[in-house]
Length: 133
Image (tube, rainbow, N blue to C red; front, side, top):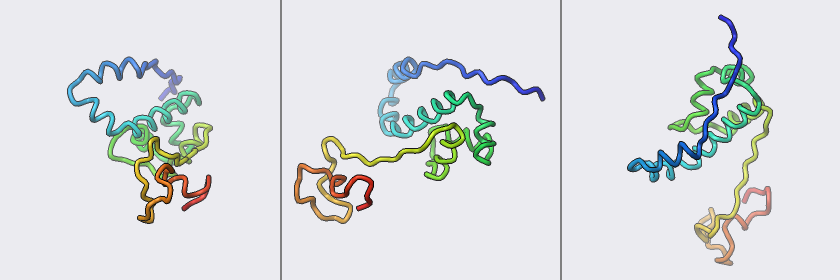
């Protein structure tokens, strides 16, 4: 079978999203999965910048095209950090994971069930940068 040249098609996500938001129930469902959609956009953008097909990424990761397709889709599958690192290496990127204080803080409770002594501080502030509390 002849290998075809990879040519990603142009997709204006903002135009698509504006149209979809007009559909009944879409906005609530989208908001519930917003983080998943953001991750997928990052994955697709990185692969497009690298100029790679799903097959090529799968080869680099040591997996199948269908596994890459599931990874790049929003659904019930939540990828592990290890899988995200393999994908990132395949497309010439690195994974960066950060916990940042919520604005405003969602809670003054720490993960240990105690209240933060300063309600103005986020529980994320209880640990130093890069440290695990």
